[in-house]
Length: 85
Length: 363
Image (cartoon, rainbow over all chains, first blue to last red; front, side):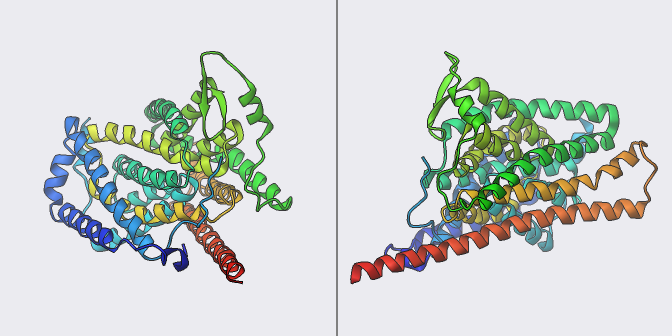
């Protein structure tokens, strides 16, 4: 986690930026269009796929953003990952 | 069905204060989940309900944030070699069956005894299970602490787990990486089922899932808590779909909580690489025992609603409810605090070792 670990590797600034922009765009879209979103997403039946797909998309984009966020801040796993056998 | 439709139509308005609140609760819940494999749901669901979200929508939306969170967390912890995907899926599938059964029990209790009866059942289940399992986990952590073995990387396998691993039932044996042994699925199925039933009842299946992987199957704590995330993913995905079929998921709530919880779960997962396995038990046991009191003080409220004891005044009910929520929030915050503190200390120790190595090699 310390900067000593991070200094040897190039930090993923570009990945962070791209994921951050897409993530913010997704959230802005979700909140500005909440009327339409709620209408379709709560229809039930086969429309049930909509919230599930949305959850996967958000987890992929925002997950990548948050992962890179901590890496850029220098918060990384211990150097010797405690691999349990 | 009319009830369900009216609940779905009753999605709340979100202002910025609500957004920040959900984001922060999501973050703390995610941090604890990343570390011990579950937790957070018991505060998130009542937390949403306090904003005016109907109970079923709160449960559904919580579940829809849980499975993507568990996915991100398990992928992260898989990088550290802590996840046994096969064990997670095997337990997850039987947990799904447990969820369905648990939900049907809930429904029939609600039908016969109303909301108060259902709440009483949930609270009593909470108190009994958390007292037995939480007490055991905490006692085990205390024993390790007293014995001076808290820095050990290798944990002792319990006698029960050794016995389970020694039983050979032909045609049912499966090798699990986490156990480094072959175990009959006839043992894993009831454990998964119980995890699912608990998830359907008190929203946190991990309070059975993680201890059962450690003490009954013989998995190391770090692997058990990481594998629980796979179970949570499998259960959460199935559960979310079921609720979404009825239009009960408020995707805005789910995604805003997810926004905070993905920051938290990454941090919690990183935290596990800095701590000794014993810390997983400390955090889990402490949270379980504190939450037990939170639910315990609500029991008189439901007993009085059912007319089993004298009626409590409105002020007393309100006071008990607020105290119960405050204790739950405290449990989660304490868990988050211990995780961050352990991580900070682990980081300092790690850096000190690194500096020593650099100095030694430069001499």
